[in-house]
Length: 307
Image (cartoon, rainbow, N blue to C red; front, side, top):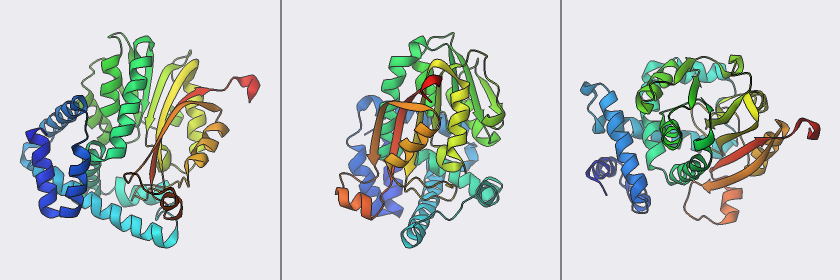
């Protein structure tokens, strides 16, 4: 384990021993190449942060506050079977327009993207897809670039002439993605993807990581991506089932529920992966207790005549 990763883990273990030990088990299984990329991304992230923030200790503080929210939301979900927010207006007031909450939530979410095993497995899936499709991609769109992790990976596998657009409704997230990705020729567009006008011929590849659960109508969003996608293009989406969070709106009950919505939007699944949040839990526990599953799928538009 690299010194940076060791420092993060020790800091988490000091304040939450049980969670820290669970993370430690996962981190021992990391592929060395991904561990190196993880530390490169974290180093860059720390450079972007204000030096007065406290670096690693600040990130861990944010992560543990983020985890407190996760545990509280999970408790409510277990009791009531639904998310605590059901509309964008609720989430906007609760999170996005609350600078104090948004700060720790954004940084905490960043660490979760690097430390949680389901994110690692899905990232592996994404990078394998990127290696297959990026070299021939001429026009690339990312919706909700987050912290720039997927954008970095796809651009690294692509040619230097690939045109890149990133659309995000959050200016804060967009600026962070821009700094993390380090792609000078990319266009970073602050706005709603529903209003975005792409190239006339469409995008060859579109990535949208963990956005569907943040909207009230995921079918409408996927249909917009279908409109933006070239007839021969592909879309990669990720979204979780049963994953309560302070800014999650739409509840996907299981993977077939997600696939049904994908088909309603005019896509077919080319390849997919589903990773439960606990290591090898019994199938009955996944269903009965509603353990979260992170799902990722490579999609292709269904021909118009087949709709």
